[in-house]
Image 1 (cartoon, rainbow, N blue to C red):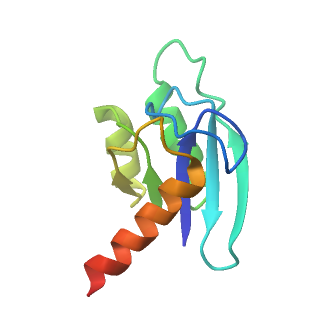
Image 2: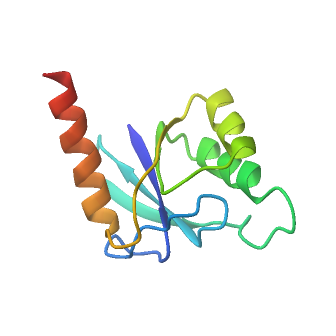
Length: 112
């Protein structure tokens, strides 16, 4: 499974970005081979429609989950169409690795 996290930087130690469509980067974590890589959010400077364009980037990366602070309605619609699970509420005081661990540990607890 691929998890996309909105980020202020390209590193796994970067802070989470609370903004989905206007984040600088998406850090992608692949749970299968445990690799992490980042992509630039090319939609960040769009005058209009940054959220839906950013959502399409996530879908193109085959992410199944996105972790972020908040997602706008238009971006949410695109993500839902692409069958991407949206998990909100992440804050900028959390690093990317912490967000990943929090999500994975919560998911494990939910399965019990």
